[in-house]
Length: 121
Image (cartoon, rainbow, N blue to C red; front, side, top):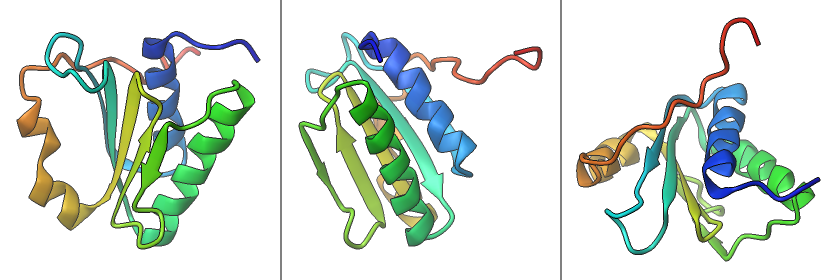
């Protein structure tokens, strides 16, 4: 598979999270707002098992593209899993942890990226 541009990778990761039953999936464009990454995906899982399953699917998809995570953490307890692909960082939370850390408020000025597939696609 060919490598994707960072924005395209962000969109695909958001779609994977949604397709695997994550809730409230948000993709943000952090360019010019954050020095750590250009894009982020934030999603809520329904259980620790489901959070791990979504993380596994994202890692598997990225591996097929030749992308390896720069780092990841939180997989063991899966209350907040972070997958760092440098230009795209994904945060998979359980609901109470997402509410507590409220990353959307932290990056409140960041434009949201439309990631949902059109109904005709």
